[in-house]
Length: 224
Image (cartoon, rainbow, N blue to C red; front, side, top):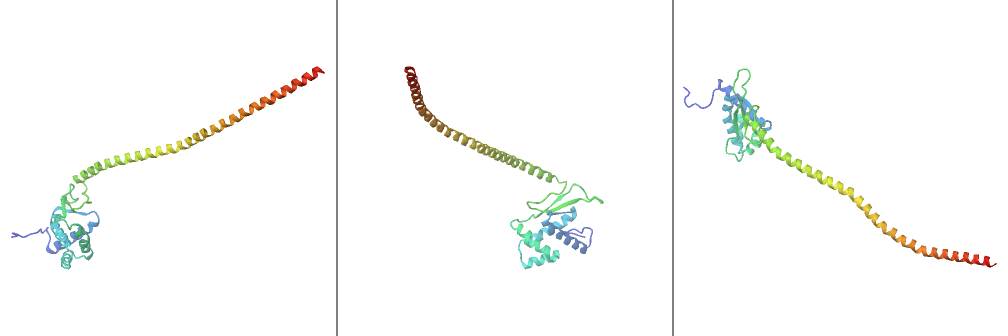
């Protein structure tokens, strides 16, 4: 009997389970730089989740002993390097719960097995296709983006209005300068007018002298 025997057999022998565990842990660590999750059956996800959590707990303290323990479990030097250099420091302040399992809506084609999403808990994670929370996050992101778009459009309108006002002021500046120049030129014309008025009495005196001479000539001719 299997009383108090931990773990799942998954209808496999021990060597097969060990290889499956190693491959799934390796796939999870590799997806840290990608989507941040893997999709497998729900029974395999529940089988591998505790092992992944333990590897991340080891990676929070980078020692030779912990790296050797992770290497014995995973067997890939590059994956262990990523685990201790990136994943461990990221969850340094988190006491646990580094991964989560979400049941997917659509079953697996062929045998209709229940699929599950096993992913890291982080800020930039993506929900699987068909998950209701993905729609909620998209709606919330769109709702959060609407006020920002309204503010950006209002700021753009203000900038356009300011540029238009500046352009109109620049266009009006030459007109005002031309009007000021014309106003400054008018007094010069008024200054020339008194000169013309000053010249008119001299012309009148010359005309009077010529008229008197003509009258004298006419008197002389009459006397003669």
